[in-house]
Image (tube, rainbow over all chains, first blue to last red; front, top):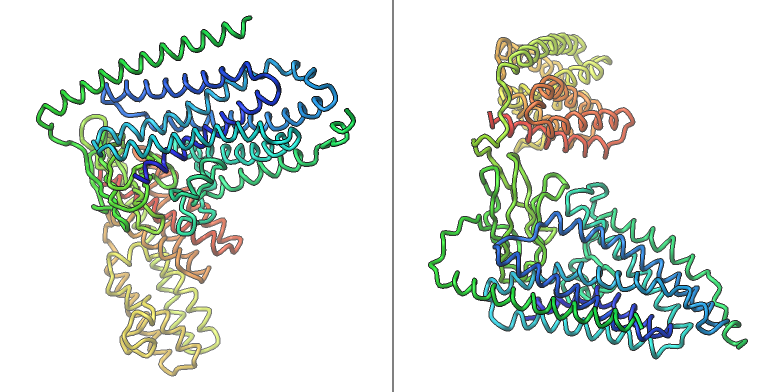
Length: 271
Length: 359
């Protein structure tokens, strides 16, 4: 069923983007031996979400919406901060790598723990929503096609994650860092705006709730294209003014700073 | 190397978790089979069906406390269903796929809420939560505390009535002379201050005094069209009927004041009238008339918000705040500001009235 497919594709893409970039990043910085940690973090988060969902179903309880939104909001803000940090950190790393191969990279070795924590949190965040949705499907015995559609969506999202990681391997190093950095900043801005929405849905933030624009007839969030955009860049078809302002402010602060940084092609050339 | 050990440990954790999830899955599956074997228990949830264009039913009434909803999506789009208090989200459920339903359990305090019904362009539904009467619900206001504000409002009506009477006397005196326009504006404003009381209690006289040309089949020339707005047109067009219209106004006002004198207006009517006056102020372009309407309903807010605020603090505070916002916007000539604040004031007064019914 298309709808289940799209819903889980969206949730999956949000996580796959972060997981894929984290894995690609570890590969490119010569720490492939740490990549299994990324898979472990992903699997742990997915399993914990599934276990949580099954336990709640067993107890005939519901996910407490407020707490879930608060959790999403907190992780969203944390992840937005970490993604932005990662973009700048990778730029610095690329710069030092040009001069001194991988020597300086070891200075940043401790951050792989942070990277894995980020992967874990990103998957846990999306996993909670995905499990809520899957459980509702199962409970209503909607037949096999619906959960199958959902699982297909997750599979496609995982494939996209692998593609991102693999694409990271194929790209020229400097370009890899520059483009992933830009993608990361857009994704981080989307996460920050989404975190604000989650705060509103948790009943905590009520300012600036005027509708900024309504694209739900042109590019609906639950259509195929909208789903992919929502998954990767936090696209919303009916965002509130506050969300749009936060999104623009986030990009307005970080994107110029990131692009204005010295690319130093000379450093690579002068090996 | 420690990394290899960490990874091995990690795989171990993943294995353990997978085992745990598998056990939970089997348990859950068995429980579902047991549940399915039992005859279905009576469904105690309130069912809301969302179609492509609206909620069915569009208006719900539930007792306060824990309420279970079953939201059925009969539209073509993925649904997000919310219970809203103003802009605040009280509860919500996301990702309801077409053709499916989701359960939502909410703990609701008495009051009026809105529910979203799919697309933004669809009308929102109304959710009325009435007090369940079981200890948990807050007690209604003490009616004895409302006697003093009612008496004070009567005094206010008498004072404003005297002003209106004097203003209409000047209006008749001015005839169609140069002072007529000023006297008319003064009398009309004095009347609007009484509007919360007259609009509901004396609808017939209110129509004779304050109707608009658009309310009549014959428009501005309809013989039944009288009152302040008709006189304003007559003065503009140097219509010889002006003195007659002014006299008719004076007679109607005299009759109105006679009927109002001594009438004791219950708090429910006061709030209903104030809400009507505020929503009318939200649609007026003339700042002087809007100010007069707001003054009239503002009097009721200042009289009733303190005693009602003890049991319904939220709408009482909201009403006071919106009244202040509307006045501030009027002072600066911000038309959009007073309109939106007046509309919000009307809404706050309606919820305050709803809480009054809880008594």
